[in-house]
Length: 233
Image (tube, rainbow, N blue to C red; front, top):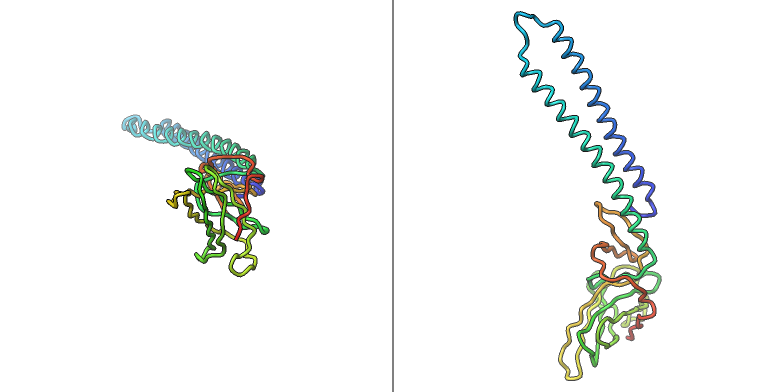
């Protein structure tokens, strides 16, 4: 359910509320009918062989329990509708912002894809490899070597053929070494600008192009545009 289709979400919530309301009305009508039948039966029962009062009590308790459960469902539906409204507001606030989240994927869209990786110390060399969804290498080059977070901008050009790769999801791998030639652990992370958002199974999902990220996975929000370094093949 995309944020652009929030009206659809509202309609679905309204439909659920209406259905619950109809159920409540049905239960209430059935209970009223039961009470009329009970009263009529009491009025016309044989005084010499009265109906067991325990049966009436059990039936009354059963109906009362159903009514109570229906009222509880009504309240839960109202709470759910309120939470969904809050989630839509939370999701829409991310659109147009830059985020970071764990992962090694990036979305290539309109000739640009953003990736990120963190280095525990300054590296002397950082070799970047980008693969497509089939696992084929589409780019090999060098990236930033500074300690901490490094942001990568890839123009979608295949470093082997020079051709532009199609839009889609790509994955990055970094091999970094220090001045002594020892390997440094480079930790990749997802980064990019949120283009849309949606509610899925009650959770806020943020989309960077075709890449979808749970809002609960977001570790940072900020402007990465000026920090990205174009990787060189």
